[in-house]
Image (cartoon, rainbow, N blue to C red; front, side, top):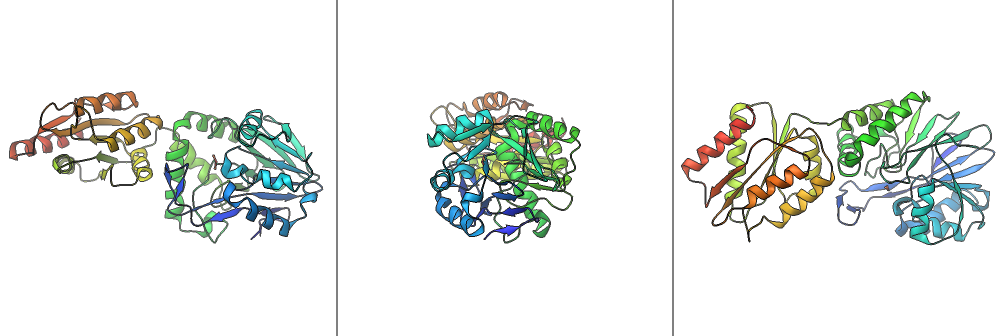
Length: 395
Ligand code: FEO
């Protein structure tokens, strides 16, 4: 159902309550999501973005209930990913074939690359404007937020920033605006989105946000391509992005492990006990990489000042869940976080050394050589593990 935002702007997107996985199986979206699309009516009428491919017909049907497609003068594609361009083929099949599609040069590549269509692409770059009548759209390229093709668009008079994936959250809601929903859930989802999608591009986030602020544009609303619209104090999420992009950490230590016969789990718990002995304030999260959700693990890692990774040695290596999560953590390109490894073994015992090397490659400040325990921790080993934990917060 289309929803009016202002006299000129209407939300015509799709709320996806069922979505539980995004980017294939990579990103867990327990609160669903939305594919936000916006119709701007002035002397010219333009459509910003569409919806994910499985909803292409529903999207076009809903749009036709709101406006005759022939009245849409142009389409703005802020970003080429299929969750926002998926309905383009269905839409363009029903629109005049020369309808212009405004996007960046990289947008042409990504859209053509996916749909193999020679539509009437109009390439725009930062500072270009499209007059709609009383209002105009100004385009601001935002490469790697989070694709090379991404751009923002700013609507004058209404003072709305259409920010593509930036400032978004995977969150389906009966409401349209951020201030109408549970703030804790909203910020959890916004942070989860940042940690899992934007964290590798934090340097570009900082640069782009500062560039945006230097433009001194009055911003009354930020309309992202997923989730809730920031209408009350929209700068709150801009300030949060500056915080998250700047080597963000809370007073938290996350212990990620996997275990075969519970020995490495016991090690994780003993280390945790040692940390608690010396620091009653720090938040500690123990997460089993084979059982906890990987999106949650990445979010907790993102929030942490220190990350401990543990696996028993198996076949001269470490467990596959640890290999998987280490690969994902490496991709986040985190900075300013401490780390160490641990694990049990029976024979060769390479896992701790190998995990330590991976943590170094992932950009962590590895603070020691880690700790190994042969077979099941006995009383002596338990004391060593507790001391290991105590020393982590004393160093
Ligand atoms: Fe929501 Fe990068 O697409």
